[in-house]
Length: 341
Image 1 (cartoon, rainbow, N blue to C red):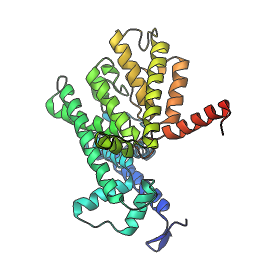
Image 2: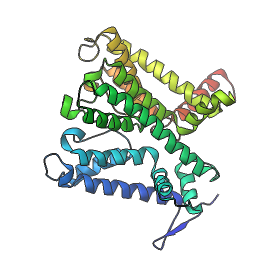
Image 3: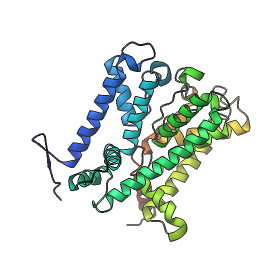
């Protein structure tokens, strides 16, 4: 089916082109803001190339950084990064729809068609309701995660900082972004290495990553499951592949790194298990770490590459080839081996 086009400043654009330009404009605006002196702890401008890299990484929720977020940026700069993460994680059109909701603006047919492309839906019917559910789910999940993290951080830091850290890391984790502001507290680029044996921090971050990574359609199906007692094939495939990848990852990382003195060798049994769980979940799209990635053994690093390649699920906040794609490929291989069509 031929996609409709729209006139934007006299230029004919189709929905995919509008999305690309929207993300490009968001990245460029973020890069400009991050390169300003008012965004830096030192009061000096950051090189525009470094600011552009950071903005791109935040919007594309990769977690890759060339400067430490906590030590390079002040509160203003960190909030810019956080805003870019939220826009990138939920999608440009979802955030635009949120603004329209807040302003009481009606969602036009043109905007619905662009939303259809952004959310990878077959029909524009029900898109506004879906978007509203996405925003509500995000608010609830990120709010719950922020509360748990802030309560835990309150034992280590002043209340105001603990709340800020809880909100920042909840958004970053749910959006599978991997950005953190631990640098000024535990050292640049340290991520959550100082909390490797902490069950509250580790499991809360993991829960947020998995929830954001399974996709909003699956979250909605799970919410309705007690009433419907039914899951679609898509939801079943996502949940089975996600669970399998976590179990395989935890087992392999635990075995590979158990005696490595630079990673898990010095940890207690509980710390080893938490470290293995965290490192099994986070590489698939998030980018946090509680163990020293550079000190891991080659077998572990190869496993992390595979997990990163697969990534999260469709219509989620994560990237990768998607769990469903991997599941279909795996099922095809198995069927071929068994001689099935």
